[in-house]
Image 1 (cartoon, rainbow, N blue to C red):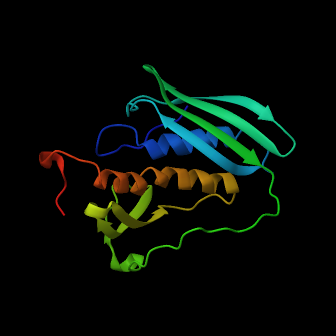
Image 2 (tube, rainbow, N blue to C red; image 1 turned 90 degrees about the vertical axis):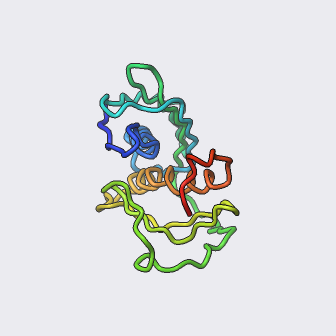
Image 3 (cartoon, rainbow, N blue to C red; image 1 turned 30 degrees about the horizontal axis):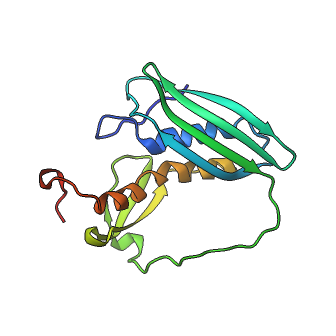
Length: 179
């Protein structure tokens, strides 16, 4: 069971349930395995006043890969589903297909944080092009284990990428934020 971070919009933050689901999966895997891939489905909004129950299904325990499926539930039913694979570390190429855009450093950007668990600062916003860049970091120390770092990344991943996607979708003028 997991408690919820209170949000300004009155529903469970998707990044929270994503991070908690990944953590639930990681707790069933030997520490030698690292997060390899994750696929998440947000089924319905979670209620803030109700704990979330995470059910972990051990799909496969292999020698070099393990797979887990996690379903997050509240009284209304499933709110989230996650599939994760974990892999033993191995030699591989370090590949980066894109370079980060040139943006001002974090201390020169406006804070747009909404909670104490993570800090974000607006670096670039071009609503017409669907571009949104921000500096983000977890608002406290992260445990020194690979899976916990992956969970912290999962938490913040539901924030800025969604803002970028929302910038290019039609929104009624009454609901569109000002520039």
